[in-house]
Image (tube, rainbow, N blue to C red; front, side, top):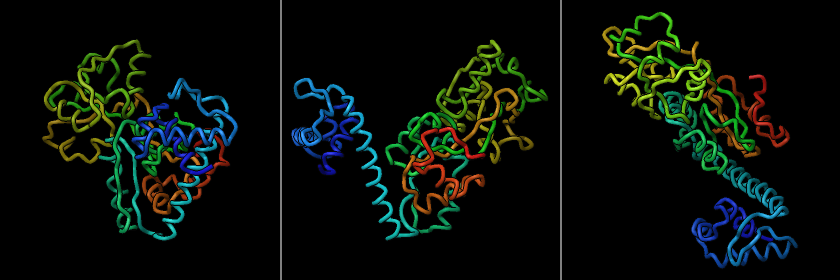
Length: 323
């Protein structure tokens, strides 16, 4: 057995058993991959894949167990490489962060700046995507750490820890009749055209659920992934915007005397949202990754994170360790 065989099997499974795509991803030949997999099966004495001619059709039952073992081997190999890199360069390297637009735009600038000040030899790579893409990037080890509100807690192979709570606000022109209403209701909002996040982003599920539970159908005329886009179309009069409170907190064009737009709290309508940090279970954490997590939330400590990602912590993704 050798690592090349393990990598071929692992990548074939990731590529939905498409050996052409597997060969492209690994920069090798398809016949070479097929031969290596067959040799591994012969050595193990079991078929990892069911075949139809030269095509792989599905993973066998013993193949599922083989894949789990290969995943562990390759993960630990990656950990060994990171350990070597860290001890060679204790305070240098690249921190890869997977996150959504809202977190990248409104939450991460200060922690990233603080990390660069503390570790000037560390560069930062930001990968933006949907919450599902954020989770997958952490699982695929494209990113060291993930930050999002939605979906991260749905993946058993991820350890997720709560960072902070936030609520939605309604954004509207200062001249809008609802701007003077002390406490907005769902009925107020249901009677207006609304502009909000795409359904997979930034607490949109809670918004849809709140209206549904009240038996109301919101008139969402536009959805987007970017709060600045939502505010722009709100300014043009297309409707009332529903955005995360972080998007208006430090906006100089909001809520000041003479501002075109004002915001009103609607957390009482849609409830609190929790932003979570995600790590791959069992992954080796470099010191500056742990330092960055502490900068994002004062709830998190290195000791707690290490306890959470330890393989001995089990496979339950929803443990919050009292946070």
